[in-house]
Amino acid sequence: MLSQNKDFQKYLKQLQDDGFNEVDSTFSQENNTTALQIQYENAKNETAQINAKFENGSVEDVELVREQERNLYPIYLIGILILLVLAYLVYNKYSGKKEQNTLVEEKIPLQEENFDFREEAEKLVEKAISLYEEKQFKEAYGTAAQALRLYLSYKYGLKKEVTNAELINYLKNKGVEYEKFDRCLQLSSLVEFAKHMPDDGEFEEMIETIKDTMKDENK
Image (cartoon, rainbow, N blue to C red):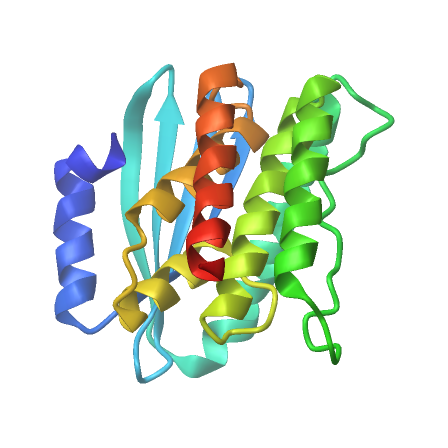
């Protein structure tokens, strides 16, 4: 929806012409309004941000904010942290599961010697399937996405925990066919942020994609 917005297309072209690349994105939601912040950075460490608001299934507002001075970066970071805290508070209020305050990813010691990332990824996939069977849908999608990020990060040399955007940008630069992975990660984010209803067929397809990826690489 956003990619078809004329203002977004204009701002994105301006940033791309100036050498900016996407580095991360953040969602926050309140009632029927969803705010999306997409962060960009160029080789000079200059930052920029495209903000968009979605309301009742349509794009209501798109703006471009540039941070040209490096010394503004701490202010920018504080703003992002505030948005994350607000997003957490809103999610916690409306999630309906007070005992599950937030979706916390398990910390995997990626740099540990003799660490078998394939085995750990397989364990996460099985855990995701088990969570889905227990109808813990958001946790299931999040765990499946974590398995995929872990496997691809280690397979292609990152060997660290990364965000969805960081991983996809890295795969693009490596020349890896990333589209199917991007679809899985985007689907997981949508379900986690309550923007898409869990679907048995989609979840099974996501799990099969992850399993097939690990199977093909093992061969």
